[in-house]
Image (cartoon, rainbow, N blue to C red):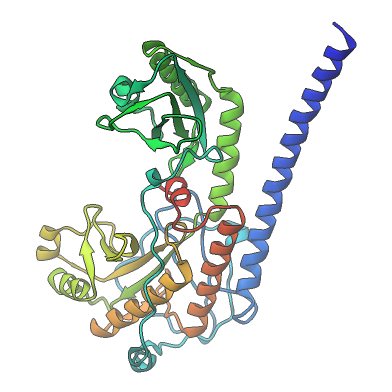
Length: 399
């Protein structure tokens, strides 16, 4: 082996080590910034903020307030639903004076204009080009231009993570998302596998399966291709999943009847639909922005059961939970303002109260603190180039 070859090998190893160290440093830096942002957000309410739990794959996150001598506990016979337990870095327990003043403030809020809708946000990650930051990408170079129909085996494949195929007619031509009925011929094709979402990171075995699929399609065309480094891509997937876990925040505001009372399902449905909600197939009412079709926030059953037409006709519930999925909304703070106003109005209409996960009323200070945490999460997402509500965010924070 010549000295030149040895030097190139040493330089290559040093480069790989340098990249790994840099990625590790960047990840630690982002995590530190996120923790600092949440601490700063909590400082506005007696030095701390309501507890907000974040976690990859958590069903929902609800704010809760610490018990104080001045706290008024709302009696309710049905037990609270089980929730994910927050870790030490995500727990904020303020000595706030809890006041059930929602109804008093409602008249003033109804006189003011409701927050304007959030800016348009696409809910379809397929409107973008291949994204090498969050996808494992394999390029195929056919020996002659091919149609989308020649990729049928790849287009219809299901391997455990979202898979997209793009084609272009030349090096200076824009990529086009391919479907089985896409017209035209393409001289270059790329297969794109999402590395992480709320179901977790893509494993090495899954990436190996992706590589075999791409190889099979390439052989059938025929086309030249270079398989991905499965170990390296799996490592990227794990790092991406850890980063997203720190940013995966959902907020819940609960409208709850007191004294063991319940709300008839037909009554709740009428109030929800009058407020602009639509019952979705996932068992929740969704508030959908008409301009974009994007869900800004949802309304779920306080009990574990899903909402259905039949269940709403026959059953009742002690309350409902307004849910804001922070990463999936284009302007989370504005959406939170709109959700808060809708929750207060519903509580007033149903003669209920707005409470935290321990059934303690949420006052203005607590709600303001929660809003600051929403803003901090949105800022942290933007800092790592995952703009809330963007196609990239919709992919990473989808199931």
